[in-house]
Length: 298
Ligand code: HSE
Image (cartoon, rainbow, N blue to C red; front, side):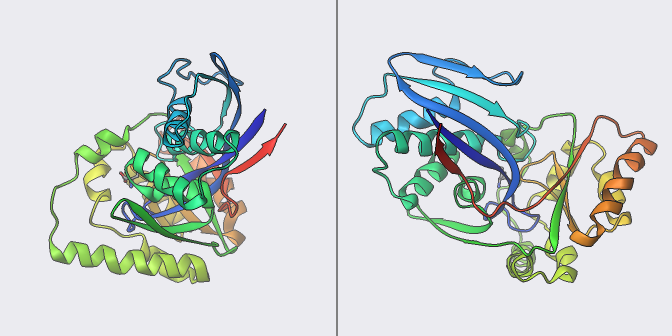
């Protein structure tokens, strides 16, 4: 069987709505081989579709069809460490697993660029799928159906503290509350900050991050969908966050922290949440993943 390891991803980084994303050191694993039947199982107790609606199978079939081949069935085993519907790219991880795995089973007919384009076409935007494939901090844009992207490493001075709530928020719902149009001043506000974010994460200019996460495009509209958002933001800054933002469409909240402050942050974050009566939230400290999806043979 082949094994595909796909990183979690955090899109937007506050200001870079639908255009920035980073890969994180939290992974889903998928084992895959061709089969005459469909045989989908899970290594953990996460509930997954085991029929043709399974997103990995569905994405794999897109690759076979694109290459003029029929996919009769597939043996798939999933291990899902990326929590679902939490703004950490779990559906992108499934899409990427399906297309990268299928491409390998077919002898790698599609180039990385073609895989990146197909993943973004299926997902609808490239800010999770591209870092899941390439790793690192990725800036991307779609023009005439093609993704133009660049992946750069994230400064080793920065770690990512995830506040993962015990509830889900579907991307569709989080997008439905956004306005159709924005004022020019708001667009410029985000443009300047997302450019600042890219250069600051790459160079490690930590003092810029608090300004670079600010945004007027999505977070103000989504904040009402995430219980305790204000308290978690406030707490994170009290504990020394360099910049806190809603990961992707939410509801996970991420603080970028100085690697030197990690122990303190971890020590106090959980107890302070409890003191505020905010229960059931998981706190994870991760690094940026620099490699992206990996395929091996087992
Ligand atoms: N950029 C997307 C959003 C990420 O914020 O809606 C979620 O897929």
